[in-house]
Length: 230
Image (cartoon, rainbow, N blue to C red; front, side, top):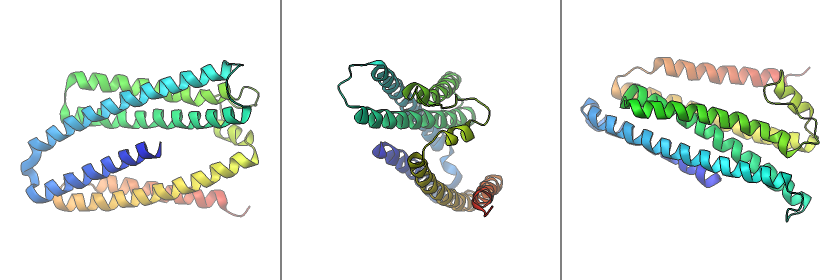
């Protein structure tokens, strides 16, 4: 799981670095080459999306099958660990698929402009969205005895937190804190890349930079508001 995420992150960073290097060396004379790069990048994304969705579907089916199997060859503790990890993996796979499908659709509509691939990526967006919603509903299948809210309910997040025990809350809080710190660092790094991109290519990224800055400010204000002394 960690290896897959690292590979995806390194691929994105490598593409961004290569793109900026080409722009710095050759400027606007590589427009046609970049169109080809964008095209094949979208193809790679589509292949990854299909692979992730298939893996998530198989993992989900196996999890549901084991949940209903009263004679499974594992203890209750082993099944709890397996079901928790499976739910986590399925959630990540479907979420990544949804994000990549939107990225691929953006590339196809703005750069590649291949009608058939646009239709395919639109289909993948809807499939990824459906799979993501179905992944959220897995928690009620895995833990039928717990009073957990259904996805789509009003104030779902608050109800889910209310039904979570202290140990789970500690794990969630630790993970969210680490993830939040990483997100802030990556957003700041993205702003720096956009500034260099604007200077090198003379294509303004001011709107994107302002948008990222506002997201970071709102995120910090929200965090400060939630932990304030009451």
